[in-house]
Amino acid sequence: MTKTSCSTGKSHGKIILMGEHAVVHGEPSIALPFPAVEMTATVCEADGPLTIDCSYYNGIAAEMPEILESLKTAIQSALAELQVSDKNLAISLASTIPAERGMGSSAAVSVALTRALFAYFGKPLDQATLLRLVNISEKVAHGNPSGLDAATASGDDPLFYIKGQPFEAFPLNLKAYLIVGDTGVTGQTKEAVASIAAKLDGENPQPYRDAITRLGNFAQTAKAAIEANDPQKLGQLMNQAHDVLSFLDVSSPDLDRLVAAARSAGALGAKLTGGGRGGCVIALSNSRTEAEKVETAILQAGAIRTWIYQMGGTEDAE
Ligand code: MEV
Image 1 (cartoon, rainbow, N blue to C red):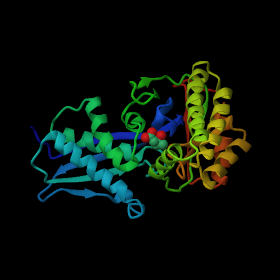
Image 2: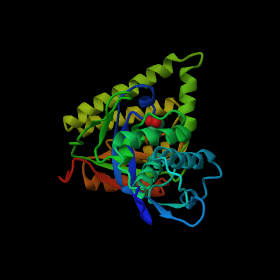
Image 3: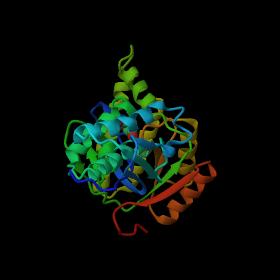
Image 4: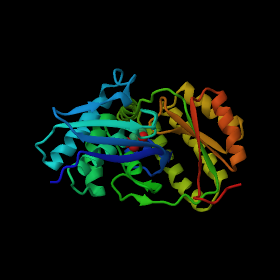
């Protein structure tokens, strides 16, 4: 194997439009790559044994030991696959993805690290191997990952996905704008996924099974709404999905406040995105002017950061 002095690997954030949590239980989902935030892992030759600069996780690592565990697992899995004995490496992360906010940071870390390690040791990395390796560390981070985050954080296409089936690239031919707002509160994907699993295994599972099925139906109907360029319908589905996710107890007062602010400011729909219990909301608007009103309302309601994402490629929705 050829060794270079330093190599990098990249990935980006992801936004789940519909079907989070339900996707873990075999229901359809839609997610989009979110390149407005990105991750770079760098692997350099070092004089001593392997070091990892974890400053990306400063402030939250102490509360969430599993995220550092998943980072270590990502490195170990890649090195085991590469079958390397030389582990004198200095590894670091630089990122604009807010950590643990439903934007797929744990998957993005693993994708970028795996790519950087394969590049460093001069070995090609196909997508199937990348997703298999990332899934190992995602199990540590999330307990029971669907695989959606890793595929979306590593690819360029919006995806329609049912667990166990191939990822379907899915063009977002919708003339609309998505507003993303960060509560600034760390999400709890692992706990949220586990609490839904406990409800489904509990004494009264039927209402929760129905909720999961409804979320899957919303994702399926959302696909049709996008294909028909019907933002109004997609917005209604987002509102309904947020209510069902709240029933499943994966929302939070912060998320609910931003969702309410977006709706009051005229959004076609708004919901939490990702694992929930913190993290981000998404809202939908017909035009950039409307999206900016929603953005202002979300900021006034306490979002620490917002993004406006134009759907439908380069064509302007106004
Ligand atoms: C987390 O970003 C999305 C969940 O659906 C979990 C998963 O798909 O692995 C909550």
